Image 1 (cartoon, rainbow, N blue to C red):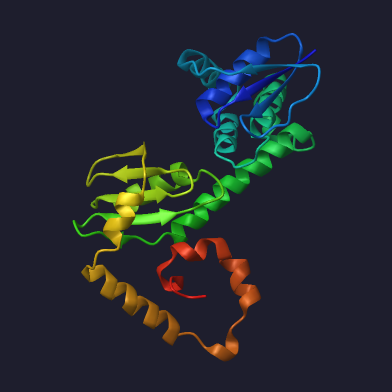
Image 2 (tube, one colour):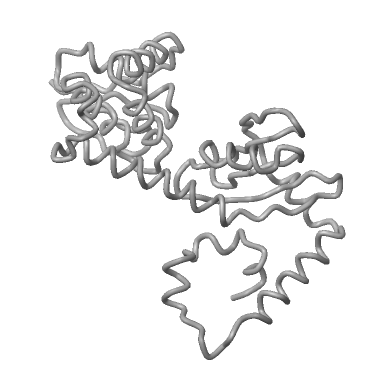
Length: 252
């Protein structure tokens, strides 16, 4: 009989699912809660988060294989791919079999899948460092709203913690209702919250509104209509990023 482990969409819970599946003698598969169809002749088990189990898996990967392999696993856990839990499990089975050299074995489907997903997550996080636009709230806090496909705020926040270390800022992911909150000259942390209050405060008139309008005017003035190339623009700046960028707000 096949055992199917139902995981929550979090790194810790998926690692616990991997821990439990590893000890299971039956045929196993990992799925995300709400991202699977019921199958006949299968035993379903809901994975419970256990910090000790998750720590054992992460420490084993780092100690017995490599930090590079752990980075691939970590990045994959941030993906929107509904099959990522099972792909992480199958990749780690190959990783513990072949060791650190597994990262060069892209001919293996399990390795190629995780490598591709990890690269996609890292690429989106890199793009966000250029596309994010901060606005100043009434109390001086810098606020930016994003809606990435992947849970990229964790990979993007360190960039702004370095570039804007002397500012209080909030980077809010409106799709996952979580934010990276940075305190001036201190570190940053992830909080789960409702962004309605922040967005309401952003609607209040401040000097920032004037600068936003000026930026839009500047953006329009440097544009040469005869040289517009929508196809090239979409290739270099995907449509899904534009609602979060000042220069595109209010445009159709």
